[in-house]
Length: 270
Image (cartoon, rainbow, N blue to C red):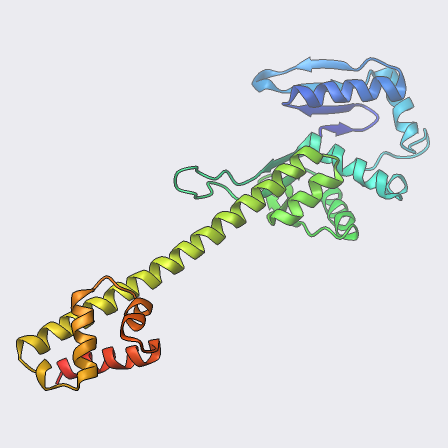
């Protein structure tokens, strides 16, 4: 989040709730008041008082004789609860998340699922990447400008990270967004399918009516078998009827009706 050394222990954030949480945790665990500096651009730096740095480092396993290296201290992350707590802290201090926002009118999503955690230290990010993989999470790791980025794009992965970090309400929001998007996709797919079927039906009916009109204009209908004449007359009288309605009116199957209509179209082309 900012710095972790014998010279300075500090977290930098733009979010007041995170700043308040850090203050509360430091007070609860170490009984000391954290120092706060508000910077330009809405940033806040929360620092452990210099004379208390050794106390905090000792709690993390860094005694006076141990160098403070910028690596993950895996000895502190052996249990799942500790790993989830680390994930929560990393996300609060250096993470961001977004979920699709669906336009109420168009039903189009303006964004996609995305969760990221940024860092400036390569080895920390590599070790964090490996730690997440051990927890059956599948992040992507990439370089961004002077730093590195761990990110998730799949909605299921974003929801799982939030759940493990303890963001239950946000996790439920992700589930709701997934369900809404899936529902909209299903509805759009069905509407498109039905629209496509309707378009094909209308085009077929128009072609049949045009064929019947041509045969009638050329005075060829009277020479056709009675079955074809009856079919042609019924279709001409009811161009809006479906094949089911036409077949029922003629007392034939849809297959037989289709055969008759195709025959009329073929005859009109000769």
